[in-house]
Amino acid sequence: MAHSDPPLTRTNVTLPASLLDEVDRYAGPRGRSRYVAEAVAQRVRRDALGAAIRDTAGAMVGRPGWMGPDEVAHWVDELRSEETT
Image (cartoon, rainbow, N blue to C red; front, side, top):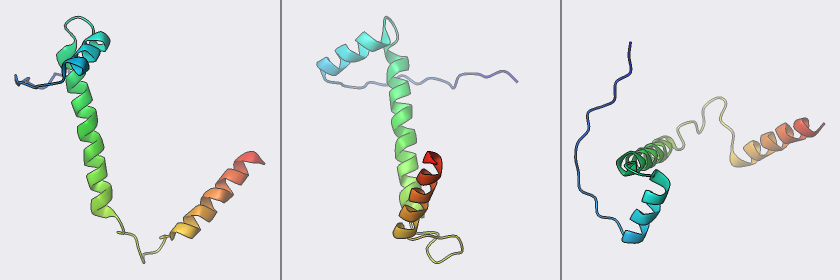
């Protein structure tokens, strides 16, 4: 099955001139839209991950396998000491 690009929608975004100059410097000729789309997609993924973390925070408390902060720190210390021995 061939990969196809999603349909594009034209939009208008207002940016500070200095930021746009930097975008153009890194994006190259005619690469502005792709550069901005990739940056926005990265931010959306980060925000979605943050929301998922907030929504599930504490979901394991009191369940088998749950470790408190001190237990996690001890576990990480043990893993690190195994790497150095």
